[in-house]
Image 1: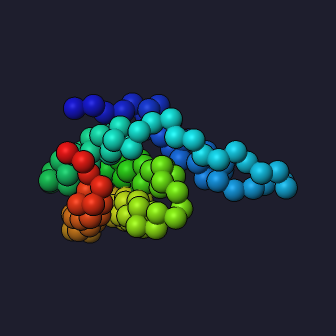
Image 2: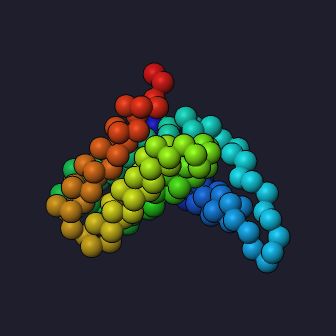
Image 3: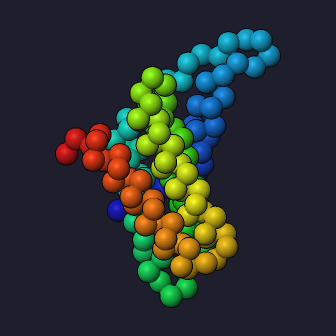
Length: 140
């Protein structure tokens, strides 16, 4: 299983923040458009690795909530970033990628609360979010 180091996860977070920064205007100057440097498939592979981490931790009697929160935030940021791989006119894509982001944030909140029942429910919702997108866009 591939797993990113803290640096790798940090790079994904920075990429997401850059995507948001590049998508608007500041100081009266137009920013260049977001240009992806990774394919959606590659990001989804990383997302899958972090999803495995979530499921394994949630199955434990004493989950590592810090690890779960970190993985959930990376998943949420991947949802943020992949939105920009399609034009805003692709409303369904944006809605589904936004669902990934939202679900990841809900897993993070459950981890912060250290609530195992809420964590399992949030991970289930995250899985449903993944499936909804895969049913339409996954090509394997």
